[in-house]
Image 1 (spheres, helix red, strand yellow):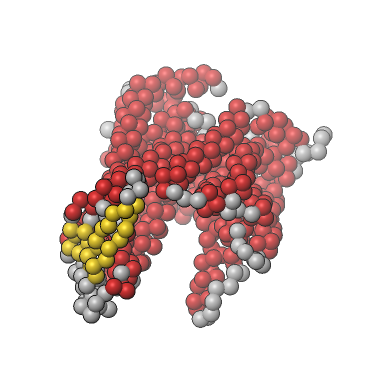
Image 2 (tube, helix red, strand yellow):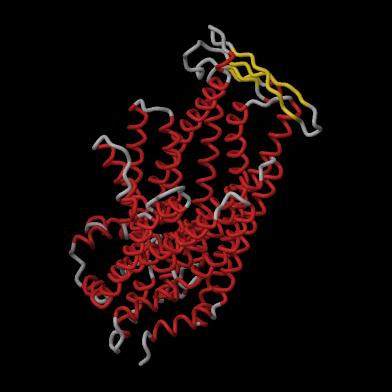
Amino acid sequence: MNWLPIVDRELRVAARKRSTFWLRVAAAATGLLIGAGCLLISRAQGVGTAELGSVLFSILTWMCLIAGLAAGLFFTSDCLSEEKREGTLGLLFLTELRGYDVALGKLLATSLRGFYALLAVLPVLAITQLMGGVSGAEYWKSALALVNGLVVSLSAGMVVSALSRDSQKALAGTLLALVLLAGGGPLADVLVGWARHRGFRPVGCLSSPIYVLRMAGAWGRSPFWWALLANQLLGWGLLALACRWIPRTWQEGRKAGASAGGSWAYAWKFGGAGRRKRLRRKLMEHWPVTWLLSRECWQSRSVWAVAVVTAGGFAAVVTGGLHGGAWILWNYMGGLLTLVLYLWAASQASRFLVEARRNGLMELMLVSPLSERQIVAGQWRALLRMFGLPVLLLLGVQVGGAALSQISFQRIAAQAAAAASAAGTNSHGSVNASVGVTSGAGTKTSATVVISGTSGTNAWGSNAVVLPGGFRMTGTWQQVGMAAAVAVAAALSTTANLLALCWFGMWMGMTSKSANLATLKTILFVQVIPWFVIGFGTLVVVGLIMSRIMVSSGSAQPAAWLTWWPLSTAVLSASVAVAKDAGFIAWSRRRLHASLREQATRTFGGA
């Protein structure tokens, strides 16, 4: 037998897949489109080439790192657990194969596309060196950091998949492992420095792929190489653990499932006997699909726990009297939580139909008196029943946090405008400054900024700023109204995204081979690609409109930019996002109702 026979076979198969080629093309095209967008924006704003090269390099490298860290979620987190569920992993160990044969074969089979996609982006990154602002050492260090992030992510997914049997638990476990690897070390260093009343010392940071990329662009002596070495030892150590655990864990899930009827794990997953009996009596007769999906309660309990903890943290921040900047940090944390919620929605919506096709349940439902509409409606009712209330609580917290974050942002904008004009203040704090602006025709116009208040006090409570078009903002009700508009726009966009992810995820569950692939396609088509398009379009449109208004009205106030920019971008992007989500929902519902039986027949016929 050849050395590493599975590796040899899987490399040949993966290299011939059409998806390997098209993913490389898509990655290179995405890098070129982002570069072209940055060039258009810089040309409109008059940004220098060297500065643009540095900005473009930062955007592309951080995007590549995020994509590399996500590779473990979608490529390797379910590669071994899927073999366990199908019962084919044990057959491999009846031969002379060892754990490292299986692990390395699965790793290369699932990760070759991601590695090729990263290689396709590196030449685009090299263009930034010609533009200036990026040195050759920074480029090569960043390239090593990106490959390092991909290796660590794939290894984390492998070790979680070796210990798991359920696809959704493997996805959640890999996400938790990546969060701990990326942010656990830096957070520990910050807490240790705060507890010991000393400065920040990078010790735990050395295990973070994010810190490796951060140090790639540092000037002078930096712990880049030590951090890279620590990450590589960690990544290959995780892969070695996966190789060791695969021969020992492939039967544990089957043995545990055979005798789990009275265990605590079974009770945590399906609830107690009383709860199962009440649910069966209530839903079994009228909504059998809803009952089938509502039996598992661990996911609902987990989402309720996250919602309660988030609401408690929101209440603590509100009553704690913290600095206004804390709300801006809360807004970023809420964005990360929203991304996790999107990932969960896509995974949960697609999981049932994928598993139903693979285990034959879909055939049984289609030969029963249930119609296609009843099957789809049953899954939708189950999703609403299990997760509707906690998601509403999270959305309420998001609205409050977004509003207070916007108010804090406007307060900082007003204080920045007051500080910029502090040289011209008199003893009563009155500012009357003239600012020159060069219009498109080359003529110079002037604008007046009026900020009134008491010298040495916060200008937030009693400021007055002349905005474009002659609108004069005084007091606080305008700020509250703007903050409420931004918060409502964010809530509407989030709600529409969740609904679209659920409906489109259900259709992807009918057309994909695995739950992770369905989740990836759902997130990619509904959220990631539209986010790039809407974000870039909103940035260009709002920037051009505000520039024209500023020039035509003779206003050049930073406070006006800082005040109206978040409102304009939030409202415009939310409107486009809601329209996009409505299209996804309508298309997915129509396909599910009209082609569910046909798609199931085609899938099983081709199997």
